[in-house]
Amino acid sequence: MVVLILEAEPEYAAVAAHLVGQLPSVTSRVAGSLEALELALREEAPAAILADLGLLQGLRGVEAVRAMSTSPLVVLGETQQAPSLLEAGADYVLPKPYPPALLTATLRAVLRRRQVERRSAGRVVEVGPLIVEPARRSARIEGRRHLLSPREADLLEYLALNAGTVLSRQQIIEGAWGGDPRATPAAVTMCVHRLRRKLEADPEHPRLLRSSRGGGYLLQPSPQGAR
Image (cartoon, rainbow, N blue to C red; front, side):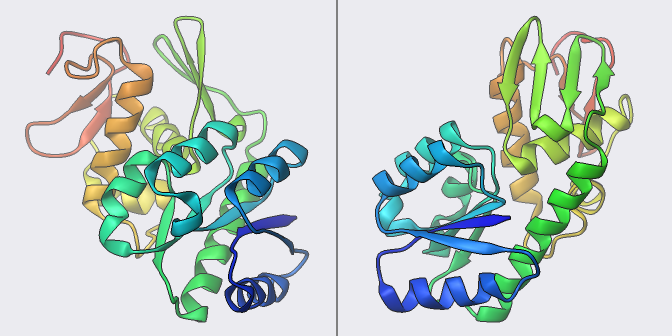
């Protein structure tokens, strides 16, 4: 497995490559610019992407990477921008400089998710008009296929497996994201918002991915009037 590293500063690139190299059966490839990263993504599908926020050039870079790849994207930079970065498609946002133990733990979480995806390869979950393909990180509805980020795919699969049941944000963090300590209720809300934009005909009045008055979300087996 390969982890792509977007980093122009040699010292940071060396540290990140060293930490990646300590993980079993994982190698790294460093790209010194966004253009080099995009070229690398055309050549291979990495297990994860570590990207410096400055080289990403902000939200547009996150969106560009997400448009090209469904691999987990870990952004390294200003954590105050985390809400907007997660909204744009990042899966994790870590401070820079980062504690090496935190980056290692994040990478281990990413690789565990990859192993789970491999075990569930080929599984398809159908809920009304929605078809969820977790291993392909995609969903189909009304004949259209939508690519999902890893967190979106995990969340949608969890809701689909529990269709018709209201799940709190904390239940989603535990069940969909393995209790990741970096995940927050706000991250769940933003992820649901992104999924609605992809799957709902009218995201402002969702018929499939519904909110509960008591808090939480459910996937409606038979789409009804918006709430």
